[in-house]
Length: 187
Length: 258
Image (cartoon, rainbow over all chains, first blue to last red):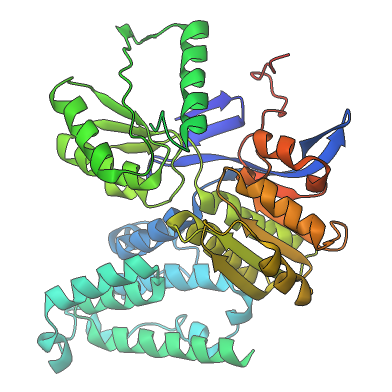
């Protein structure tokens, strides 16, 4: 839903039900002897960034079916082969985004690793390890809810993967996250 | 809406907006005539807001809950909207989470992160390397604004050299401004809720001789709202703000009152 208003073009984002509008950068200057706000810059079509981050995480969480059904949306450079698990597709999408947003990680060994094919034994059935069986679904859901509150996307994806009981990949993911965190501390 | 109390100014302006639209375009939409029932929440009062919302839904049988200047009231009414499945239009309250509380809530105004995060990116892209953030008030809005600016500024490569938050009741900003000046930032980002504070702030900035050319003063739109500009006078020259609308904005639809 979009319309032209006194503020400029406005729209309502159907996913978040929040406004998408221009933000104007203004400076106070004297016009006609009176200080007024003079627009010096316009940033077009700004969505609410807090909700956009949540939406991005929800997209990743639900990206399993979408990303794997529609390879064009992955934009990961290499098309997904038939052997990839759904979870792997979702992380491919996430890491593609991470590479784009944080260029310092583009050549990081951990991100490069995700270009490799997944473990072949997790195609047919996800591996249920001791740890995965012992974690209660409620705890994981509570963890996800808490991570949503704090807007920690990496944690949310890791917990979502745990929920899928794909334990091996989840641990890999967490180790990658730790590697990224340590490298960002180093830089 | 708070038609009385310290936030009455905003509510009156919104009400005038409604009246102006009805005057120009009529109150009929899609063949149905819209009737407005006005209820006064009197200020920050989530219990009152929830009760009024329930009364409106149950007794008056309204189809749309609209208005909402203050976040706690909006959050309380969001519960009513979610359980009664009534469309809720948020016209002013600016905290991001409100639209997530009810699947029937739609916002038409602005959210603080939209303004402050955009501003953070813009500031870093336009030559500001070090910033100091100041937030007045211990509310969610101050938190939203400050965190949003810091996050976007850091993501875009800037450095936050310090930040401070202090309660609204403090009328004297001089000490905090002095501390900010001592750290020698390139820009000071401040969030000040609408009201008398912007004027007091500008006065403090002028007193401590923060040169607007060397140190950019950045703020959200409330800092230089019309009423604040009038009371600040020349002390406000050079302040940069980010907001979604402005009475001076010249668009096709906008006819400025002469």
